Image 1 (tube, rainbow, N blue to C red):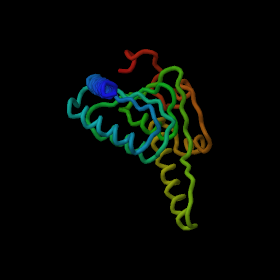
Image 2: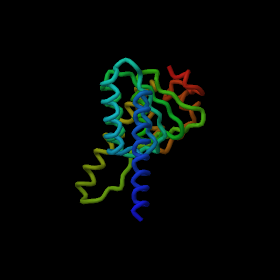
Image 3: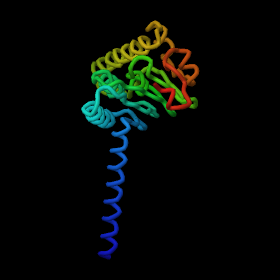
Image 4: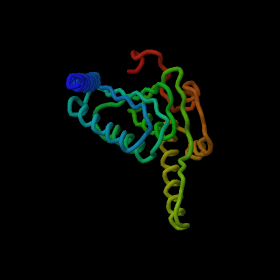
Length: 199
């Protein structure tokens, strides 16, 4: 029995060391992977990684790989702002899905540094929420959602060169795009098949 406990502790130790080793490798390669729902927890994790990577070097680019269904709009905007806050250049690469709030993260890259792999998908849409409470509180929340929607569309318009009204109309309903369509729309700088193309 005691032997089993000891072995379990040894296994836990190996897992922790393996995880720490992987984390160090990620830092050494200046890579961040976002493969979960956008949330305050994700934002905290990305902030911590950005702080460390910028302390290490402000000239070498940070590569951010994205495969996310979106989530919290505020966290998406927060990560977008943090990408632009630090000196180190940021390159974003979508592999899989880039939807909703994840689009904000994707667009946080330096100009011309947002890429997509060939089999990814993009989704623009207006923010939504399950509103509860008194009529006045519902109205306040609805007003905030509208402000978020306008900010979201303004950022997309700024990157794509389209008018905010056009983006707003497109994103009024779920607006799916393939990488090629996102490239034509101006959302993606380039569809790539090799890391060598992400310069």
